Structure formats: structure tokens, C-alpha cells
Amino acid sequence: MRFELLFLDAVDPSLGRLDYASLSQQTLMEMVIEGVTNKEQICGDPDEPKDISDWKGVTIKDDEVVRINWISSGLTGSLHLEWLPSSIQKVHVAGTQLAGPVDFAFLPVAMGMLSLANNAFTGSINLERLPNNMWFLSLYNNLLNGSLKLGGLPDKLEDFVARNNEFSGSVDLTRLPADLTCISLSGNQLNGFLDLTRLPQGIMFLHLDRNSFVGIVDLSHLPPRIQILNLAMNDLSGEVFISDSLFDKFTVKDTKLIKRHVE
Image 1 (cartoon, rainbow, N blue to C red):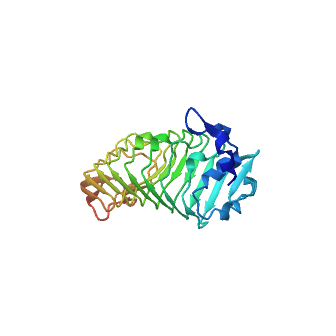
Image 2 (image 1 turned 90 degrees about the vertical axis):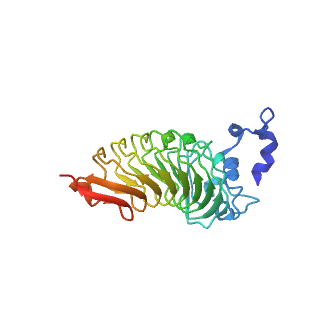
Image 3 (image 1 turned 60 degrees about the vertical axis):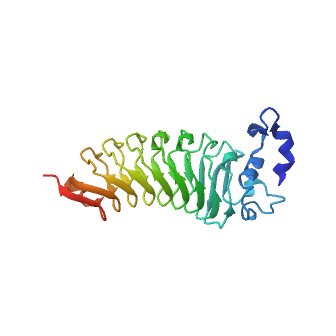
């Protein structure tokens, strides 16, 4: 690929690595897909890639990449997110066969949306390294693992979907972003006690089903806008008193929780 010809000129001798700022957007994008085994579906001939303005699923504005949209494209191999051009605002890579780890450490500061759903990505993730401007993060149906430090989510995040992975350990739901409206952690290996007394006031959808949470839950301080609360298939127990408006929207199937109407 062409970026290999620029490698020596772009190496910072003091750091022993590529100088990101010296690389063109064309070169950066070629590095993003270097691990993709069938990259011809995106850029044409891998040995002589097309100009990025002609790449499939790439949106250019003012000569800069602002969006990537590779959905159900049959891509295989791995993706190097650390080389995304700084101008990118939205990345939607879903329904492919891409695998390997995902690195959030060097995502563009302008990025507001990242969707990596329905792939085969593995390894742990560092939520504390996400861009401050991110408002949407979707990682569902992958093989990601490790802990989830939810207190490190960006302040502007509105949607976080991480269901059907292999995340484990306890989660702190008391320090979620104030703007969060939806969080889905269903179908993982999460455990420990749940504190639902300090959820964001604007949250509407909370999916915690199909994990291994234990103990009793206090529902006396649920936010007023909540529409769905799913705690099914956990090891929770005890009586919970629920308002009439939420009673049918609160799911406790396959738990030892007993729903009671608030008198």
C-alpha cells in the first residue's frame, strides 16, 4: 500500500513511531484498513488503492473524511481505529466479520458516534478514553470482555448499548452521564449489587437482564421519565414496590423479585 512508502519519512526518531500529524488522510485511512483481509471491497486494488473520495462507505466534506459507513459488508480481518483521521465524526461498522481488539485511546476528538455492533471484536475496552464529544456508543453482539467502568463515560453520552458480550464484574450506576437516556448491558456476565437510587433524571431505558446481579433493589428513586426497566434473569430477590405507570414496564422474569403496587 502507498502508506508504506511514506513510513520512513513519517517516523519520529525521538519516539520511534509514526508521526500522526504528518500523515495525509489518504495514508491514515489506508492504515485503518491495513488489517482488513478483503479490503478491496472498500478501496479497490489493495496495491493501488483508489482515492478515499471513491472508497465505499466513506463520506468526504471539504476534502476531509467525516463519516465511515461499512454495514453488512462482509469485511474480515481487523480494524485499526487508532489511525482514524481527526476529522471523523461518525463511524458505523456493523454486521461484518471483523475481529480482534478495539483501541479507544486515540479516537478523534470530534467523534460523536461509534457503532461496532454485530461483529467479532474481542478484548477489554477503556471507556475512560472515549472522546468527550461522544453521544452514541454501540458495541452489542461482540466478544468483548473485562470490566465496565461506567463512571468514565463521556458527559455528553446519550446512548450506550453493550448487550450480548462477555463483560464481567460489578457496575456503578450512580455516576452515569447526566444526559444518558438509554443503557443496555443485557446478556453479559456482570454481577454484584445494583444501586438504582441515583440514575440520571432523563434516563428512559435501562436493560440489565441476563446477568448475575444479586440482592435486593431499591426502586424508590427511579427517574420520572423511565419507560423500560428490565431486570429479568438475575439472582435478585425481595419485594419491590412499583407505581402503576411503571408496573407493566418493569420486567422481573426468572428472578426472585416480587412486584407490588404502591398503595
